[in-house]
Image 1: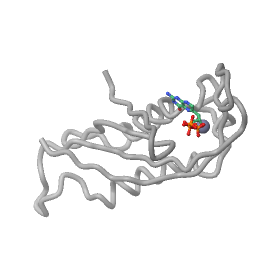
Image 2: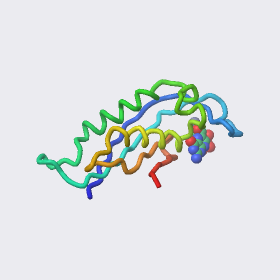
Image 3: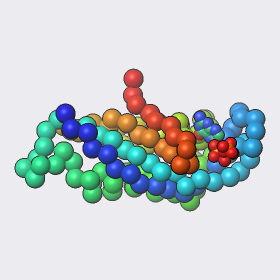
Length: 123
Ligand SMILES: Nc1nc2c(c(=O)[nH]1)N=C([C@H](O)[C@H](O)COP(=O)(O)OP(=O)(O)OP(=O)(O)O)CN2
Ligand SMILES: [Zn+2]
């Protein structure tokens, strides 16, 4: 099994709901996003999946979030736009476009600062 990881980023505003503290107020982050997929087999070029494809598909999903107020988006109407829920949202979106018999999304990690991140892995 091969593990492939790309990093990318987006900027957005949010406020945590059902939370008491300064993060219940409107503020923003430059989130870093790390996506890891597994690949069972390599193609003739020796690639599990082209990093360019992985980054392009991830960035398509990040375009839904970039420079948005996350609380307004359908994905976060029912759930607070925490790093955990952002990681889960991206994981589920990417599974839909990347998973095939060979490639599978393994983990999505979302860093809201240099010091704090949340990851989502399916059960
Ligand atoms: N488990 C989580 N905890 C927190 C999340 C989260 O998504 N998951 N998010 C926040 C807030 O969004 C907040 O913006 C976090 O900012 P942070 O940099 O941690 O807070 P400070 O800058 O105030 O850092 P200090 O180290 O406390 O000064 C909060 N928690
Ligand atoms: Zn925040």
